[in-house]
Length: 362
Image (cartoon, rainbow, N blue to C red; front, top):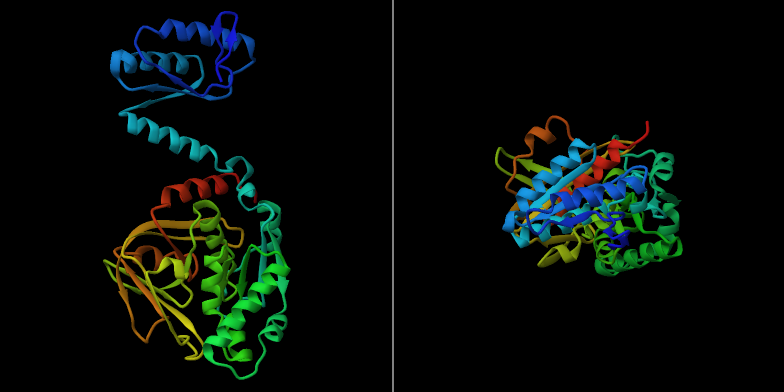
């Protein structure tokens, strides 16, 4: 808000100034001088808006040079009305991210349920639970798989009925424990209950409970980031076929809302139960991973889906992108599972995670 101060307009609290015409440079200098006299320092960046008409850009350049010479931060937004509005909206969105809180505001109060230990083959996908609690305010709740097995039961039932019962049981525990996210040692459920949790996790992701499998906490954190930051459900998938031009991912738990068509098939590895085979729209996606025991590394890129495939040699949902990920995945990957979300969100994610890493403590 602009307020009158001794016949001048105060700049206190003002971040944006529209320079509509030339010849206002001395007026700005006078106002700015009054403002700086009234405050010990002006700790902000002043953004000058100039569409170029009536010598507004020329005036803005002179004002920006004046600010720089006097040790103050400034910048100019210039272009069409659309470009100016887009720049302002983008800036507001960027500054609304919880950078000053090391990302803690985004996750503070989040409760993650860990159903059983991580799968035995995940030797590089764990996190430091104490660290994520201290740094991001995330509570982890460890849940004995026997509790879920007792809820599901082992009586004879059809595959779909068993899958539905597994979904209801997991959801019930999530509600009882007030969980925002969960990951499960899913293959133990296959052995104990002769069913899978694949369709249950797909449904839970659509309902807002971020749900991952195999106890992979790094991937679950990536999925949680996608939900919190981008408001997108996430597909947790394995890189499966890489060429110099394409990358194919596959898994059995794609959220149903990410697909235009879904078919229920048996689980890939065990051949029993129910798994989701989804056909995903051939459009733009973001592929990412946030990893390391202290979440100190990340990978994010964008690609276009070019083909839905189906082969019995892979997990049931199979999608191919027009991107060569060999240099990254074959040389310095962040674990196995990666996360796929609809839309182009790479810059937004990079800004947030770069800020988190820049301000992290050892």
